[in-house]
Length: 242
Image 1: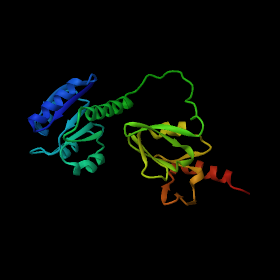
Image 2: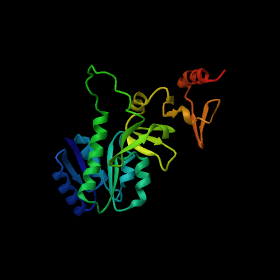
Image 3: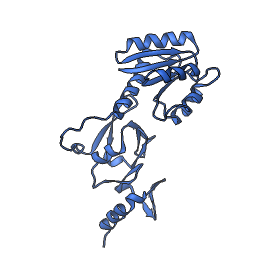
Image 4: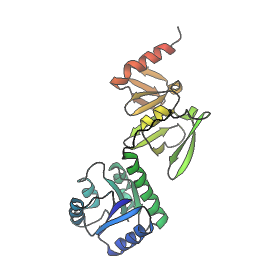
């Protein structure tokens, strides 16, 4: 169960959110609050997994309130103002619901919160063989509520952003997926992809040039982390034609 707290200064909005929560089997309603200050009191007394939080509220806005929370707090913004979407993303919000939103959109946001929470919870170690290499020359990733196929030859580099990974293919905007860089490092073929930084994996075939501690892939400039530099330069030397 995902324990949730609803925070909104509009009674009608709280009633609608409450009815939505009651229809989702994996959500448990901890309480409803009319202000961020009231929510602070509840959080001191109750265990809450996710906040459904309005932004425009008296005394303390939703954005100001989030800045007082732990960085790992799960927050889904619910607001009538699309202008705050970018700020919500910068605050690592799970999702951003623009009023009026339908029940199915609410469920999608709740599922994202559940997925993120489950990804954080430790699992008991079990004896299992290593994950198999991707079949053929492509992988499938979950992105924007659908599963997308990506050809390995199109991947230029991957960037880790906390709980998310950006996959840059050079075709349109990057694909954003909930995962870890370590998972991709284990999954991608090591003869074609190499981790060069705590936040970056690059495709060797897309390298244009290497200058000191920088890798140039088209317009992208990727830093080489100190702890990865020796192994990376050794790999490049081994591939040099003599």
